[in-house]
Image (tube, rainbow, N blue to C red; front, side, top):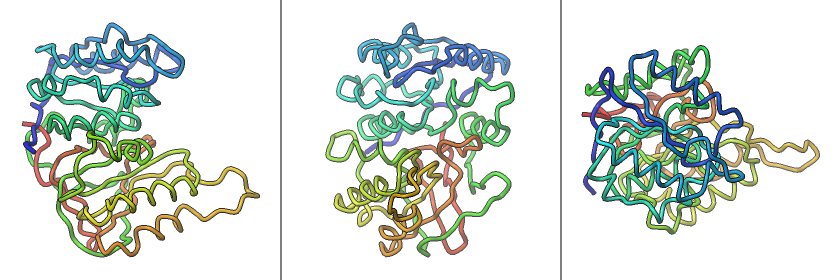
Length: 314
């Protein structure tokens, strides 16, 4: 598979805004996110269907697909940033023109439900994409979180090798299984990633480093999803695993018998004989490391380091 890096974002470039999953409860967040980009000197174009609503979807599949295709078709648009996650991205996968994406590579940003699009773009078009901050989740705030902001802009505007990645406040990584590994980074939200198993939209596990995070899933569901990956022989095929933040992944009913999240993770990953790095600050949290899916990375769980081995843009 040929890997395609998008061109770096330059001052005054045009940023496109789309909403391929759900819409925010407060549409003013979109306006505030647009103003944030404009204050930094970028031009912004908002997809014509952004703001529409069909229950838990940001418009019909056709409307959301139209905006996606329109942004990739527009030669002036250099980066596409998603409004939010939620649900709905996976409904578009069998309708997308992947040749359009392959021949018009652009910076594409989002996380959570956007995982479905990012894995499909990598598998079907070879495009490196960015699990990073979104318009109505991160960029609408009066003060964007400094760590999230600085890391994001550095990774999409600089064609220099990125190098070692550090958590905010230098919070340490933890080693679940000792070792070293290199490979291209795949993964994202665990539930969304698993929903692609058995489809033609999930990249091969071979020669990959698998990253996983999630939110609001009690331990028995995390158990089920990790078991599904195990049965699909994912852990046998990957070179290593990185775990991000699992937010509110506890049992809500204190009377329910439950394994802890750490017990579930230990059951599946402590004996895979592949290096496992834990506590990378990425997921549904304010301080977020932007991850370039498809990029060559290295983990060293003896030294507890994570390194991006090249630039993510050209």
